[in-house]
Length: 99
Image (cartoon, rainbow, N blue to C red; front, side, top):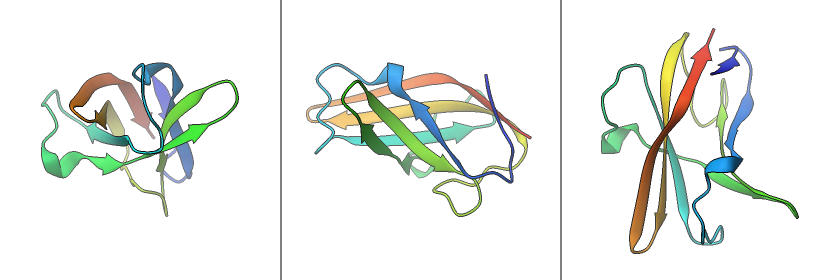
């Protein structure tokens, strides 16, 4: 479980979970953060981005004040969704503790 202070602004990255064949120039990556065991609904998804280096591809999203998602203190289940036509891969990828 990752731990992130609610007052910090930082990327949450998921480098190990990028589906094979991902085209970072066109494929959409989104994240959902849920405090319950429910599945995400359309309104839960927030657009992330790709970071590409010579050695890896990372799906990421900026958390915290001024970021894409601002979370209040709690434990969240983290979901990622990658849309790569015709596929849409949805996975629960772990948890994050915001304190």
